[in-house]
Image 1 (spheres, one colour):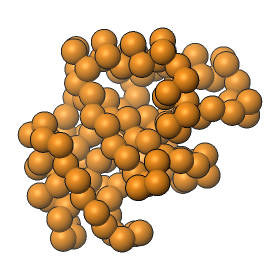
Image 2 (cartoon, one colour):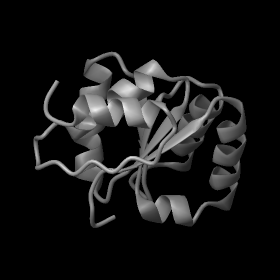
Image 3 (spheres, helix red, strand yellow):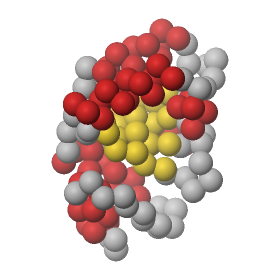
Image 4 (cartoon, one colour):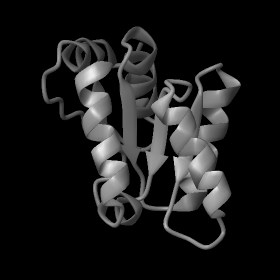
Length: 131
């Protein structure tokens, strides 16, 4: 582990609000990935760009962590989005990458997350400071 990673993971898992500021490539993703593996909670990661989400989902899946992404764009069909939401609701997805716009514009989705927060837990991560 690198500097601040263990402390951040422990803080995250204990339910504390956690702010970790690391340089690009400093290991921020490992913090929320480990916390997601060690808890039953759904981890929702706010990421501003689809290209960043593509890379992050690919990395998580490569390491065996069920991950998906939702974004506000016509590139992602309603059928794909419905499948992802169903997988989230059933607990198959551990980490969800989402754009802030997609989260804000979908009340039904936010209500579903509220239900998840009471059953298995919910963790939020802002992966880019400009989100």
